Image 1: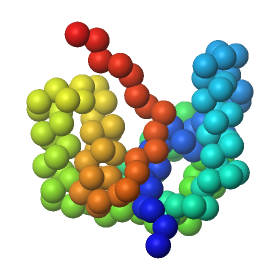
Image 2 (image 1 turned 90 degrees about the horizontal axis):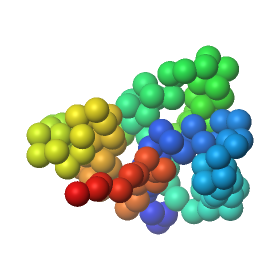
Image 3 (image 1 turned 120 degrees about the vertical axis):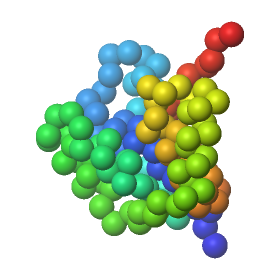
Image 4 (image 1 turned 135 degrees about the horizontal axis):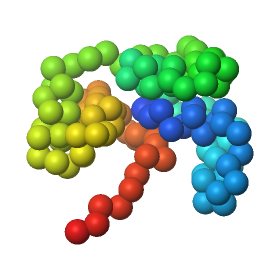
Length: 127
């Protein structure tokens, strides 16, 4: 049985975006492409309606490419425990309110007992 992996929106976004001039971002895009080519099939992939909502934003041509890349990947359903966890993550400021969709991604992956959540959407919290 393959490990279950939740794909957060940054993954399809990095796969279809024009190469960045920012060296760090370009390296992340290249790493994402390499993952797609060499490791993607080692996992059972899942997304959510939140991922679909986010990939539809922005340039229509890029949105269409992102949606095409995600075609056929199963959707995780909403669960009451995911909704409660997302509220907790936001209420306790574990994830900032401006990143409410990110709280949803984390909560869905946890509630559905995904083995992995794949994302580039991470920043260091400074105290």
